[in-house]
Image (cartoon, rainbow, N blue to C red):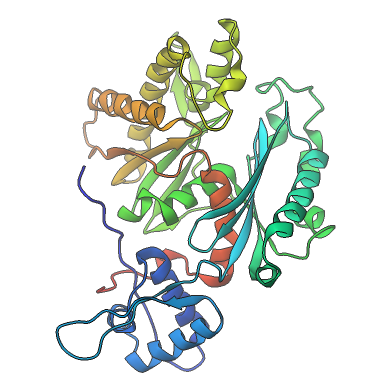
Length: 400
């Protein structure tokens, strides 16, 4: 597979009073492309070298940037690349799942510093928020005190309308009702003053892929995340779309048709809860699907037919999305072992090639690069973006 290159960003301005914008622009470029010297940043953003130099010095003083090793060129003084300081900024990510809750602390470079996980038969607000509170105490107890003030917020990734899924996860009918009236910021404010950013869980996974994974290579793509229920995300003009009500890219709800010819939705054909049921029917423990590190060896007789069904359904959904948006690519990731994800991608490619695509330009189908942690990592990215970075649809075409 050819080497993917990150699409470029640009769009600086020199006028007085826009330093915050320019700081965000430079931080965004460094997050996206890695360490660069000031001369490259000036050329790519259109800012003057003096303006870039002032901004870099300020960001370094603030602890957000760090100097790299001096690099000698052919002529002139050696250049010094500047990059994000991994200890300069942190955020929490809370992933609320149908089967488990996870809390992680992520640094600004996307590295997970610590992570805690709790399994349950189904989620309740009391269990989830108590776990978040206790996890934050445990994580901060091992984090150097000087870095506590570097934590900028808490991102929450939650399924859309979680309270409606009791039947599919075998929960009592009233067990999830309390989620309908939950105010996340209010609940969390009882034990933390950090700002809270809430996002749909599949959109969060898409954002993680966009910032830290293969999404950097594409301007426009659709993203499928295979979890207990398959979900998705949409990226247009380098921007992850959240939608008016936070439910953009709800690809799991796309119409589909089962092998029996009955109408269904994509989530009825390509979700992991279906594989759970196959395992139960075969007298096997479905808990093996979720135990980290993921190892699905010995489950091939159930996984293989599920892969065929899921791949065909995702291929058809991919064709549908490309009839609306002319996507360059379809990215597929999930709470799957890498080998299973790659097999799903290969089968989806094969299925797509057999479909009637008249009038359409078929996209490439590639595996995502983040994996099961994508939802929590994407959640943790929310506070960082809202306070320090630019939405990438604002900044294109840097001559880096």
